[in-house]
Image 1 (cartoon, rainbow, N blue to C red):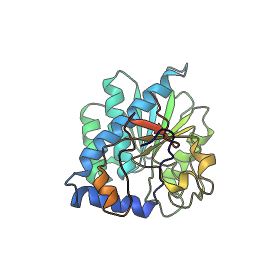
Image 2 (image 1 turned 90 degrees about the horizontal axis):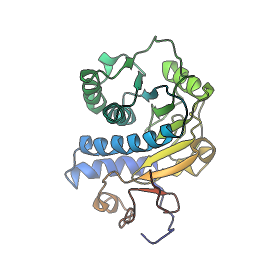
Image 3 (image 1 turned 180 degrees about the horizontal axis):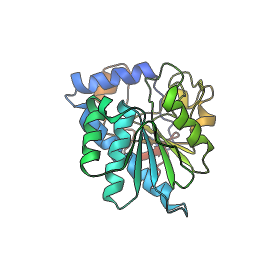
Image 4 (image 1 turned 60 degrees about the vertical axis):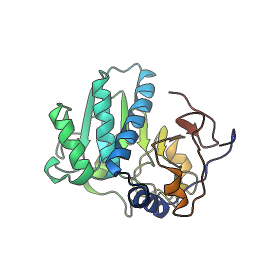
Length: 246
């Protein structure tokens, strides 16, 4: 990547195709990529938390899909680094399946505090809120307990770090559904999602940072996205390609 070269954006459909290509073309398991993604989120979360005077916990909002799994990996790392953490689940723990379910079982074994639906929502004392509710596959406005968590996060006097794209914002069009997370920082994974710079996206995303999560260039080129190394100088970069340090 040349210095200060803007990164290409990718639609939600393209990102889904890249996920498939990682498995079918490159032989990666999505669990491997989730581990890298969750660690990247934890690194940025720790940096943002240290800028706050609050001694409260890092509150992580965990959906039942890929973003929720990333959030649970983040929780594991932060716990290991001595941070207080609370994971707020969008549905009962018994209903989590797949990769998110796997990560939830690990979190439970290491005694990460879990808050299930029905818990009284209280975020005012949090040091940071991490939004891992919905990712690029969102197709409808958040409802039910997920909507309550988003509204509470937006009302709290606490900065929000969004994973990949703020929950409630369409990853392709940038249209903000109601409700949608209003983030201070968005850590987008692999490549920036088109919705971060289109429509309402920029105003909801805050500062956008792009993380290297180990997606091979072959996964991108196999779905028609020509790309060389976009992280040749740092594992975190801004949208214009400038290295970011955490």
